[in-house]
Image (cartoon, rainbow, N blue to C red; front, side, top):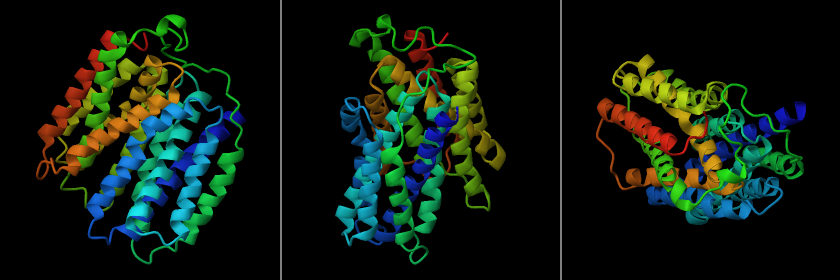
Length: 350
């Protein structure tokens, strides 16, 4: 038990510091560039889209920690060397991708059949980005401080044992078939429809997360509370999925979030809507793994590639002006319909 907890704590903490460092680098060293918007596009491409091909490589490796450690090393170089805006952006994005694909694959392997631990792992990045952006303000923090943290993580991740934990499937609702069962591996046409539905759900979650605007968000302390809602939503989604089943969790969380988005002109319903909407993050990830058993790295990369696709409309300025609570609610309900279609076509739990 202690060993399995240590693995999760290490990678979840590292996720926080990796995203903190990447945000720090982009805002401390690149935000002053006249091409900052273009640099953000390159960063997101490297950090998210590249994880899909990297995932194919990761699935052939026995150890994932070496990739995560390589990501830390790239960030150390980015922090300490006088890179220009473009090399720094590419190095930071690739470092982020290497850590995430190594860590995400490792967690999925280390906790097979589980949703709780992947949910906790993915949850910590949002709060890291929030504080890293603040720390990236000029003269707020010297670069050697995050460099020391990255150096410590480099050695911890490099030498962390990756001996798999005994399978501990969810206590409540069990998968209808074990993910590794021979009859769960079917032809491409049988998984194409649920696969597309899940990809669209992740794209919508990415897009909605980037366009959310609330008049009350700038009021202290609602901005931080909103970030914490994202963190708690991702973590709680995994816990509840293991306890009550993924479909029940999806139905309640997305249905309730759609209703609450209609009331999100007030802070409390808005915060609750964001928390509930983010609960599907670990559920879609584990659903991918159950559709493509034995390809945890590729599945994690697919999810991050879908996040990048959701970013593209924002990069092209396809963003509604002001607050659009009806649009937010519509996207939540559309996500629910897509999840229902995917689940009905190929159920990943009872």
